[in-house]
Image 1: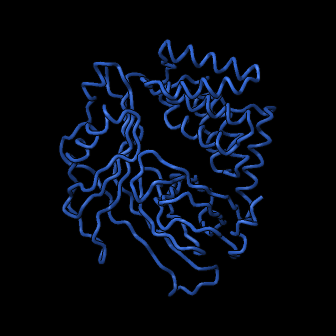
Image 2: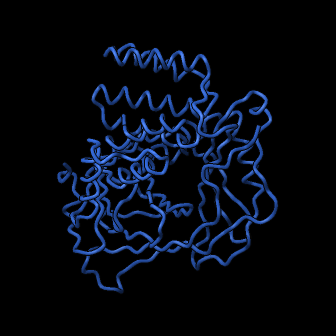
Image 3: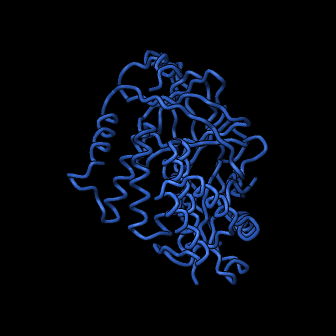
Length: 373
């Protein structure tokens, strides 16, 4: 047995720069800058190992850990954000994070807290295999047959029982979320289906075969296009090409992809309604969350019923915690990696995220809830 490469190995926090402006005509002296400081790389020989209790039972899993790097190079406030097998992997991952040491650095003036880091550790024995237990495979087959017959009531009951199983493999986690996504799509709940396929794709490229990954990406393309997330549509198409299964010129899905590419090239604002949903491993003060793949260099928030005060901005392996204000336009850092923003709150907020092109005036009225299509 071997430990697979972590899904997102931390290779140092990139320097990020965010520029905020009230509108396109704001004077230069009114601009506000937020900067996260120098790059970081762990020093020493700390090495992530596979937990013996999980290895002896043949169980795979993953853990997302948030922590801060302090100016003296030590790690502080490490906590589990999400996890698949808390009893087997959480404490092991936290112990590893606590053992990390970084080069000391000079903090930015007026900033007392450390720099935030979010990292996913994946524990797996194999790559790109549809590894399923006999019990899981049998239940999944029954669910597929029920949905094929249009018996959604039976499919829902079997899916609920599937959730009660102890998932042993990362592939099972991906397939369970995928089956839920298919079920929600067939009963007409596009948003619930989109959230489930996002979960399914979290480790699909590592845990399932190419043909299974292709099916998940096809569903994701349809759902993200319906939601207006054109950046993710193009990103999923690029992933299909990367695994050797590009869309053909005559593929009906090319119409969806071409529409997304046209929307991204247009200067028109792209408004999207966000709804924060409960997250199982959030803190007491951050019990609801959702994330969005950003497709434009600028974005703004507005909300008729409140909006989150803080978000995490992640661009590739870099991350920074950003305080939010309504009706301000945030400019993304100039990095090649795609950026996504994750919102947290203590209640299930609904608000609007509007993305803008780099050039052109910003009319904040376009960011109202009533402007959504």
